[in-house]
Length: 331
Image 1 (tube, rainbow, N blue to C red):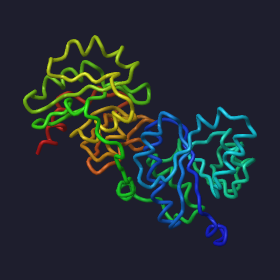
Image 2 (image 1 turned 60 degrees about the vertical axis):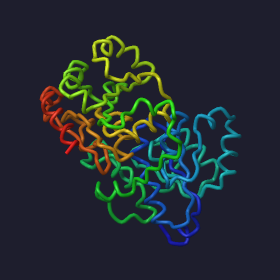
Image 3 (image 1 turned 180 degrees about the horizontal axis):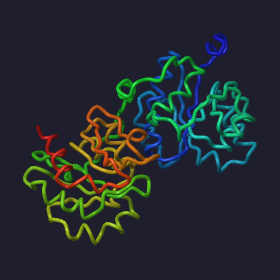
């Protein structure tokens, strides 16, 4: 990209209007943008339900709510973006509607991938990027879109971890304080995945809980309102010491609880990536099958790790293996 255009960029919009895990793995992009363009303002276009996650990123200056934009008339949508004085937009998650209004709003630099036909008509800088065929991690794939802004090479996963910049801006809710133990290892188990990851199974999680001594581990079960219904009968069979927090927290509260806990185990789902980002002990359980394998979706964090089955299911990940990994966090 010519230097004069780059030097005129003062406000960049990252567009990622999909799910929590995807958003978490896009957030490091904001820090890289600020390194490439010191002094630039970074906005993030996301959904209402992902705003609490986006707000944890210190490098994001402004959240723009896509759900609110969609309520406006087409003319108002274009006017809204014009008023933001955005110089460049990066379409991390291809969204035809966003691409169309960004072009209509006259955003000067519009970066998208070559593998979306509508980007050929709505973007003026196309980047060749095939996620399905790549061996790169999702976070690395996202950063390829920064090449037009001067990113010379795809960063290592360790370098991306250093650019996470998690910042818990909300005060820890007093009502959650009693759910954490001051003298035990607070372990969050998030057994369901809303279909985003392959699940290990409630029987396995139940056996795992039995293997973890209750005088050492404070077990907390989390899940959404819908998952609460699915988990109710299973939770009723668990020891009385297990803390049931399914369907009882907003996303900001869940983020606060995760950030104050000691560890979390889950399949490839949003809370797994939040835990990794927050810097607590994190264990993801993955099959060796594309596109949900850990090579693409492993949690990224200073204390994050994963176990991979080596097959197209999670059967090889025994309760003993998982328990051994979790107890190693105590050392």
